[in-house]
Image (cartoon, rainbow, N blue to C red; front, side, top):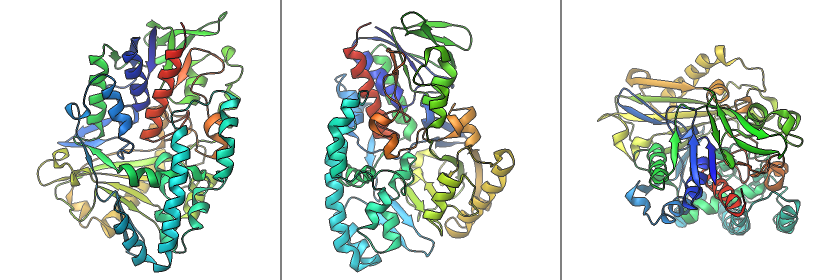
Length: 491
């Protein structure tokens, strides 16, 4: 079969590699001048900045892709474990150093609140049960109602209707520990107070398998997967934006894609690794969409957006870890502003990424490469980012200088910034959402946009907006699901 994959993010790459390994003729078409999708790489003034995902978990999903071609991951890219996984810093100055050492985690829990040690042990046991049930679903397709019916008893047993925060708060009294063990949904675009407690499995995932980093940055992992894909015989076209998924009006099957330059690429199947809503609304004519209408797409709830500032310094900040979670003075209230009110707050919580803590080659000698990320409302609110971006940037950088990076303004030598407009206009994301469809229970599994279109039988979806969801394990698994679906289909 001839297969065209729209977009070269991790979901698209995973699907394309597996399909090429099955013997199909696969072409990836990518809008931008480099592969990677949200994992785009910025290089300026001798600094290298990963544009998007930086936290690698579930490494076996990466190793699988290489092993299926009889290759070793280490021959393409070197993955190294990170310790601590994160430093979680609070407004009162306390720091929780979070890693995979059970004794070290218990010691830190005891330091924060000795009364919460038994609660942590019960919490860890509970997340293992959720992990066992939840991970079994990560590469299971949910395109039929019966697929959901089969797992409903497990979801009821695990009380999946609870939010992550409600689940965690039942085990911890200390508000800081409640945040330490509930923030993980934010890494996949979810609000801990609204995301299903199934996402608590991330704790066990990290404890069992660790948090990893690709030497050379996440972009080095993208390059490794592209090399694997090409060695298997696949074709990658850059600067090739798709204008339309062409559909046969009689058979209701996709016939290929038409590029913005007018070129038509015929296909027996099309896989979109682009934004689900924008794929349907912008690329598939409405006449061919009885179920996935514009109205249905706009009714879905979409995740938050982001402001990300990439910057380099001419000095090193060696007391800053690779991954830092900088909690602000508010937790639930801030998240309510972001997800519910869609208002931009004066305060913020931040993720600070310092990859040069692990790989100094990403900056010139004696320098540091950073990015700082702030969750913000998507474009469904009333913030005008054309005027709000610069003042918001200034507040974040002043906060970093005052609390964590002394002398930052004097040592800043290069900088680049993206905001919700970038996600809408460059990454073609509906409402500028950074993680597509919000991960709540009523938008999970069968209730999430399906990996196989209900309207067009040979149109498939991989990536954050479809099952199982955002995050590296989710999008890699979506590629696996799609490849298996197509492998079982007939042209």
